[in-house]
Image (tube, rainbow, N blue to C red):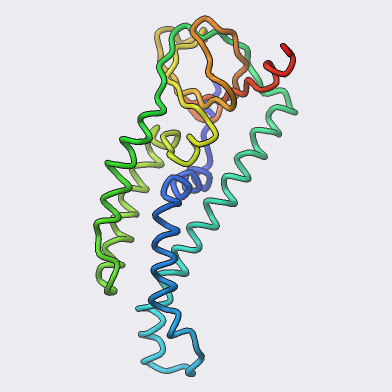
Length: 208
């Protein structure tokens, strides 16, 4: 069986997308704090301390934001290319459970605690990055990559049992389009072990 693995760079992108609202807030706070120091004063010890204390953190956060945006564009291109290359399997949905509400739980459990951490001071910024790194490592090594509040704006998330070779095994199904029903035949693309993508827009267009 093909053990397709999602690239870690793409997993990181999905992580940054999940935290995009918080990253934007931190970036805006960083600009407000560091804007008055954005003037050239030459290379010296004081300017280095000011850069580390007020400028470096917003740059890191902006890098995360851009990484997330570029990564999700690459994800969409990858799905499109797989469709063109025919990497599509037909299967039947045997059982289904809507998991969109898990994104709310994810926000409460992982995202909101970040907002409670004080932003001011270099030590607090380091604490944020350390906590961020720990959650990121847990995220990319688990199926949390599909539990994403931002992606749920466009996609629906289901836990399904499919008519595949592995009987009685549950999979995550990321659906672009309307809801799907138990017993429905669908076309899927494998994203990661245990995670599939399905677009039902074209089927709806044909039925019209």
